[in-house]
Length: 242
Image (cartoon, rainbow, N blue to C red; front, side, top):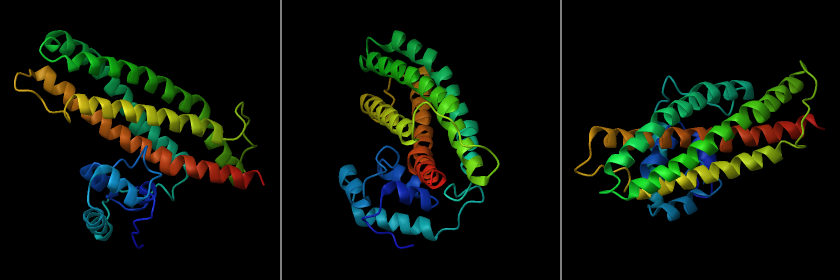
């Protein structure tokens, strides 16, 4: 596959093992910004297109990790199970861990670091939105997708829905992904890219470490949904409805 600068970032992230690591390293948004061309994404990130192309070609030529799974070819049910098992579980665990930690660090260091109050406020909003978001996926969207795949296989009837086409909940999920991405970008900016100040205690350091871990996993999580699961679900619905 030739890597063209006109290709969508999300497609490259889905097709090339190691591409997401390249994009993270270069500060390129490949999940919420996956619709952009590689050229536009590089321009937005302020990085040289040729540098990114070299990194992507090196990733393309490298041997895939033994743990790499090409989710563009696996069943949608397998992908859903992976998202639930890996990302939803991790996200809930991080939210449980960060919530009291953020309050503690804000109360102890807030006077000397006023940005902590805003970070705490943003995290609280993010926590509330992510919990509701995952619940909607687990109770509504994901079961519909799994039932639709069974319909295509001829092992189940067409799934019923209260939302019409699958495009409708997908549109909402993408909008919520964008909101979560914006909040994470604000937190990263306020924390100066999670740079720990000299007077930081162990809890302060841990807070920034765990927020960054949440961010990195959430980007992978959103990438799998925005760039792979959702487009494939829309395509499948169009096939089974004809």
